[in-house]
Image: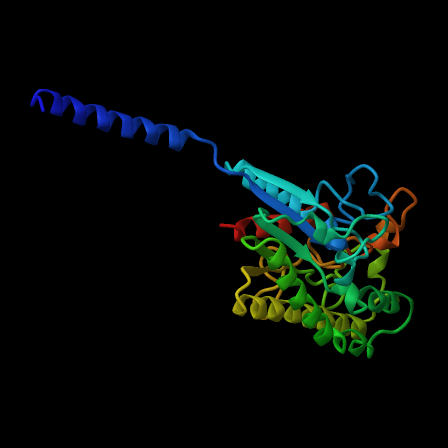
Length: 300
C-alpha cells in the first residue's frame, strides 16, 4: 500500500465520521406521543374553552392539565403529540367500553404511546354523590359511603395499570389526583361565592369532606406505588404532599372559600351561561394550569 495514501484515508474517514455525527445530532427527535385518559378532572370540566362537540358531553377543555403540560414541554423544546379522550363522568370501567357514544378510551393507546396521563377513581366511589349530599343535606357522618369503596376502586385501578402496560409497553403512566376542594376551617371573609355559605357546608361537613378527600388521595397514591412495585412505569402527581393530608405549596390557600384566589369552581358554575352542576367544585382554568405545571415538572 502506498504510504502517502494512508494519512489521506485516515483524514477522510475522520471527516466522514464527524459529518455523520453532525447529521445525526441535527436529526429531529421522535415526538412524545401522549394520551390523556380519565374523568372530568382529566378532561378539564370547569376550565372553559371546550373542544368542538364536547360541551355538555365529555367537556374536553383546551385548558386541561394535559394540554397545559404538553404546552410547557413544547416550550422547553420537546415535540409532543397529545390526544385527550378523557370524558366527564367516567369511572374506571368506562374507559374499557364505549361511553357517551364514544369509543372505549383504551382504544386510543398504541404500542408506540410514550406517555399516559390519567385521573380516575372518584366516580367509582361516589365522590360526587357525597358532595351533593353535603350541599343538599348533612354529610358530616357519611364519609364512610366513599371510604368503604376505596379498596375495590384501588384493585380495579391497579388492573387498569396492567392493561395500559399491555397495550403500550414502554409508556410512562402518570396518575393525577384531585386535591382538596374546600377550606378546612371557617370561610374566609373574602369568600364571595354562594357555595361558601355556612348553610351549604357546615364546619363538621368541611372536616368530614377533607377526611374523604385525603383518603381518596392516599388510596390513589398507594395504588400507584403497588403498580410501580409490580413493574409498571407509574408515578403520581397530586395537589397534596406525600402524606395526602397537607396541601402542597402550589395549591395551599387556593381551595374554595379560602382567602387566596380559588382554584376550584363554586356555584358560579350554575349561572345560565356556565357549565352547570357538573363543574361545581371542579378545577377552574387557573387550577388546571397549576396542576399541569406539576405534571410537566414530573416528566423527565
